[in-house]
Image (cartoon, rainbow, N blue to C red; front, top):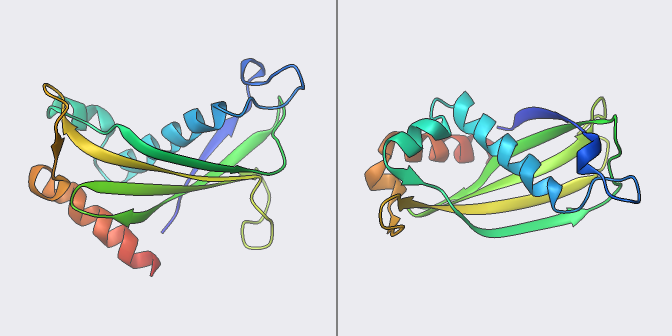
Length: 145
């Protein structure tokens, strides 16, 4: 199960070569991840209100054809792996209108997050602290298998 988000390339995201600056794709991943959480009923602001944060513990990216100002990207996000303490989101980024079944993604990547208590930043078990979210992660991951 993949979730779709669209991002319009803003001029401020481009560099002197006229393409999206490499680190800005991680911001896109963050937006797509937050939209996925919202769609599954666990918006990130609610996770924070419950006293938790989800910092990145690992991030990877593979660059292909760069995006330029004025283009729109479609980001396909999925839960690629989850454990009681960590969750990995995978991202495939296409030019809007491209068929993800027949077109190679322009950018691919992943981010791995853990759950921490906001007050002390100590890792916590997603399974114990947010069992509904953990069950949803497992459901999504298993639907892809």
